[in-house]
Length: 222
Ligand code: ATP
Image 1 (cartoon, rainbow, N blue to C red):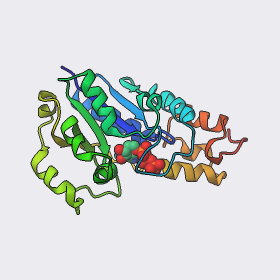
Image 2: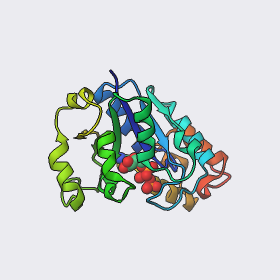
Image 3: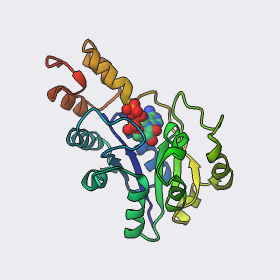
């Protein structure tokens, strides 16, 4: 039985920090696919700057570079607040016994106690955390996470596929200091050459941004 793995985000825009994260976890855990789930209206942060249509289009272009990465647009179709607990409950109803894996970067994991009905997430899915440059995962874990970390942390990834939910696992990946915030800031400056952005996000995504003049990118960037 394969697991269903989800990487949620605003993907504003999608970049290699997301895509390689999903790809590495897919390979490391031997998964058929990882679903990338764009949020409609993320509850715990400011609204995205690109529209849902553009974020979805960019995500599809980015995912196409990586076999096994698929886009699941259920949160956009559902509309309203994109609570992960609703998304995982939906999947749990569809797949009662299948392991669900919620993939989180270290920053998102540390922010988990701020999420709607977050404790339920731990019983709906396994949490797979990856390190993110600049975020120290264990040092000063937020107090509400100390107990789940102590009780649920597993070091054998095989355990994740043997039961449907309930564990926390840290997947080592090659660290990538890429964030959408930095990319948006570079684009907004206007003077940044496309060459500087090339290693950060897929060429097809960059071409889409330029074509649609997103994030203040200049119309003459080519
Ligand atoms: P922003 O800079 O706008 O906050 P972001 O680059 O952090 O965006 P999100 O869409 O908010 O991207 O992130 C979605 C998920 O991907 C989160 O779990 C986040 O921790 C993770 N993630 C994003 N970039 C990286 C990265 N470079 N390394 C590891 N995880 C990442």
